[in-house]
Image 1 (cartoon, rainbow, N blue to C red):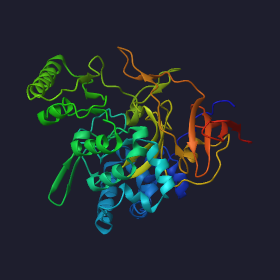
Image 2 (image 1 turned 90 degrees about the vertical axis):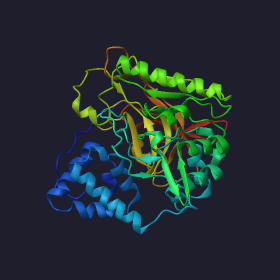
Image 3 (image 1 turned 180 degrees about the vertical axis):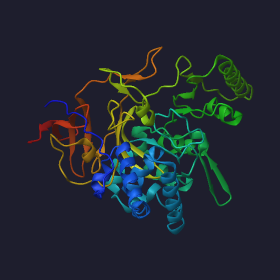
Image 4 (image 1 turned 45 degrees about the vertical axis):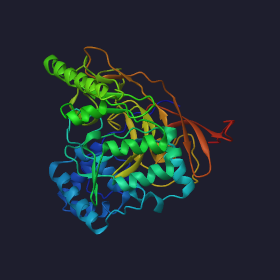
Length: 414
């Protein structure tokens, strides 16, 4: 099967789209569609309904940075109002997932979680954010729900060792319940205590001494990585930051505790452009597949939704270099050759894997994609596991049923 060409982005349309069609829109297609609704006066009623639909709310929230400012404001206003009507329950899991999935399915999901985005929105709001984080924290996962999740499913979460950020800044996390104020450090400790791993951290909080002290302090016996992002930083500021980090490390050692090495990540490079929303602003580089910053396949949990992830090259359809779609259910529907993986990902679980495929050279302002295609992955439905081969446009070329834990494969008939 030949690789499939990208489809053209449809322009404004007067025809209402089905729910399933909307969930398959690219970010630019989503913007176009909302613009059409705005022109006909139907935008607010659509967003009212969408905010009641978990998958549509997740889709629109994830791509919110792409929306027009007035559309963003209207969406946030509606979601805020509905949060007051349906308050979060402290005894629940995040997103009240226990109401949607069986115990067996929850174990499957948490075994493949590779990232947990603690906040929706980011205080930094970097212009070149590869995950299109919108500026300003709007929402967070309550600490009590995170505690419930780690306490009940620590064994499962230990398999994927998810990092605790995505389109977010880790140090932004703050959860107040009663008289207790919880921060990122408290959530980090949940992972250490109940899932038996020390989450790696990459942060752009370069001035908060308390935060740098945390980054420089060893928090467990497990191996981990701590990075401060310094892409495009000038030498003078870089030296001042290096001094602050060394100062924190020395203070920690002097107190009798163990220090954790903090690396300054990206100091040799400029900001990486051409991914996420900046894809629209960059001129195309012929015959050079670009990569985003996503480095995992699997499941992503955020305050606004549960998603499946699958890393591929950047395209107009997938400008972040990752297929990301809400995980709505885990069904018995089979996976077949010719399926669009995005559709499969709405009804099954992509198994968690490290999938880094981007590299950048000095002097270049974009990451090259060096992964090979077809790309292999494993997908689990309610009753079956499949080994799939996927092309660079996100279509299943070949599909084999995994018949046992020994992974004896049987080709699925087309």
